[in-house]
Image (cartoon, rainbow, N blue to C red):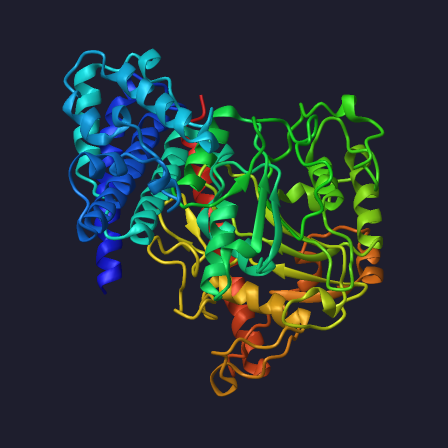
Length: 558
C-alpha cells in the first residue's frame, strides 16, 4: 500500500505540473513546451541527487574527523560524485542557486547557462540537453512560478526511489504531451501497454538491444525493467539506438540519464536509412515503433542497398524498408539462438501488394522469418487512428533460440487476433490491461503479467506455442495444462504452405476463424420457428415504417 500511496503522490505532483505547463501554451508552441518543463525537471533531479550524495559524503567526513577547509574541498571534489554514478552539478546549476534568482528578468538565460555548465562538466550529456530557454521569450514571472512549483518536488528517499519517482512523472508528461499535441506527439511516444507487450513477448534477458527509431527511449526503459524484474543484471544488456528528430533525441537522453541507463544513441541525431549509425550491429533483440506509411523516406537514393535482401521497397512507402532494416540488423543463428525483432506496423503491411510489397512479403515468409503476427485493437494510440499490428521476426526458429528452452517452430507462424481485447480508458483511448497501470511494472508481483489480463493472454499464447516451460507461479489446477492449442477467433498456428494458400497475406483474421459460440441449450426444432417469426416481424415493421416515411414525404412535395 505504501508504494501505491507514493505513486499516487508522485502523479499528483505531475498533474499539478501539467496544469502549470499547460498555462505556458500561450507563449510556447505546443510541439515545444514539453522541453521547458522536462528540462527543468531534469535539472531538479540531478541537483537533488547531487545534494543527497553531498550529505552522505559530509557525514562520512565528519565520522573520519575531517572538518574545515579540507572538508569543504572534498565536498567539492568532482570524483567523489562521479565515482558513485552521480552527475557532477557545478555551483551555478544547483537548484538552490537557480531558485534564489528566479525573480531576475534574465532567469531564462541563467537556466541556459546552468544547462551548458552541466553539459560541460558531464561529457556524456554534451549537446544532449535543451538549452534554449532565453529564445522562447517566456515571461519571467511565469518562469518563476514553474521553478517554484518544481521546487516542491523532492527527489529524495534514496537513488532508486528518486529515479522511480521521476521516471513515473516523466512518462506521465510524455503521455500528456502526446495527447495534447496531436499527430506530432505520436512521433516520440508509444503507449506503455504496447511497449510492455513487445518486451514481454521478446524477453530481452541479455545481449544487444536495438531500436533504430527510438523516440523518447521507452523501449529501452521497459527492457531494463524486464531484466530487473526477472532477477537479472541490467549490465547484461547493451543498448543501441538512433533517432532522427533532434529534440526527441535530447528527450531520449534525458529519459535514460535520469534512470542511469547507459545507451549508445550516436553522437548526433540521424536518419536510420540514409545514415545508419550502427552499420555493423547484429542485435539479439530489436524493439521499435517506426512511423507508419512514410512516403518521403529517400527511397530513390537507396536503390540497390545491401539491406534490401528481399526486394527493393517502394519509394512511396517506408514500411518494408523498416522491416528489411530490422532483418538486416538481426544477429544470425550462432548455436545459441539468433536475433528476434518485435515492432509496431500499420495493418496495411499485412496485405498490401502495391509497389512490390506483396512480393517482398512472400519472400520474407518463405525465408521463414515471420514468427508471430498480432492484430491490435483500435484506439490504442493517442495520436493516430490507423489500425496497427505487431510483427515478430526471427533468424532462428529452433528451440535453441529460447533462453528457457523450447520447441522447433520451423515453417510455422503464430497468428493472434487481439482486436476484441482492451478496455476504454477514456472516450477515445483504449488500453491493454496488464501493462498500463501507471503505478508498477509487475501486475502479479512475480515478474509476469497476470494471465487474465489482455497482455497475459497474448504473451502466454506465444510462450506456449514456442514450447517454453511454464512460469514458476503457473498452477495447473488453476490455469489448466501448460500446452498450446489453437483457439478459434483468437490464435492459430499456420504453416508456410497454409499462408501461401492465402496469397501470403498475414492478416490474423484470415487464419484464426470465428470465435466459438456457446450453445444456449435451446433445441433447434424450437429455435428455428421462433427466429423465423422474429425475422418476419422485423420485415413487417420495416414495411410499416417505410409506408410512414413515404406518407410524410408526400406532405412536403411542392
